[in-house]
Amino acid sequence: MTMSPSLIATALLASVQGAVAAPMSLDDYLALDGPAPTAQFAYGPAPSQYAQLFRPAGTGPFPVVMLVHGGCWTVAFGGIGQMRSVAGALAAQGIAVWNVEYRRVDEEGGGYPGTYEDMHAALDSLQQHAPQYQLDVNRIVAMGHSAGGQLVQWIAGREKLPKTSPLYRDKYLPVKNILSLGGLADLRHEKDLIKSSCERDIAQLAGSASTERPDIYSDTNAADLIPNGSRTVLATGELDTISPPRVAHDYAAKARLAGDHAEVLILPGASHYDEIAATSNAWGMVLPVVREMLGMAAK
Image (tube, rainbow, N blue to C red):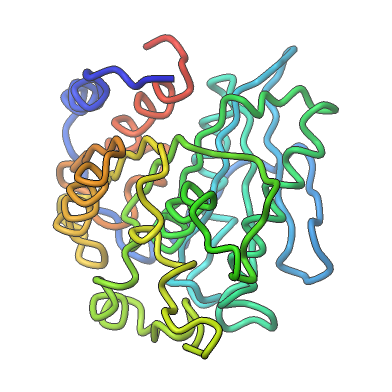
């Protein structure tokens, strides 16, 4: 699927439909909620290894959005529950949602390599359950917020993982349509910002160097796993101080220089949180992008 050159223009047009509300705060984000999922599936033995399915009404096959929550890679800032806000909105559009929980750096088994292994396993589980629930695994967008943005951008580059990496897989479900909402994906070049914004040391996210793995970014850094044929939209709030607009522009420029397709969508008047609130003006700009990436007609 080739994205239309008007993709960002479509989103910008949606932004003029209403006045921009006050930017959301962390407390506003933590209060987000949405409908209960259709079903929940464990993809591993740990309490955090599960995914929630939101299946639209009617008969499929349904396009799929894989949601990966943020929270600075820690359990302290919510996560999967807040993503129910947009999960419900997507299901109402006829889009199935695979809302993923995962082990974070302050949980047993989280960090490197466990968090990344959870992305593999969550997608394997999606593929396993797709026939029963009429999910079209050929039409998938991986959409991640904040830390989840880093993880979905990593997902796009799995074919470039070194064969010596414990994260390497020879078989996996490819996902090449990526929507990163305030993501911090370039671990190598944004390590200082990640430290100041999230108080995370890179070793928590990328492991420690060893003789077998001298470069800790070789299998963790999305920006080291390009070009990979992905189509990425980096959507960031104009007022985002955790992952400022510069981060999106820098990554998109790097991806385009490598030969991948990348676009930036700056959300007027939005903070780091507005894009995952289904009632926000920012979501009104993000939704048309999701629909177009899935090949759905504009509304």
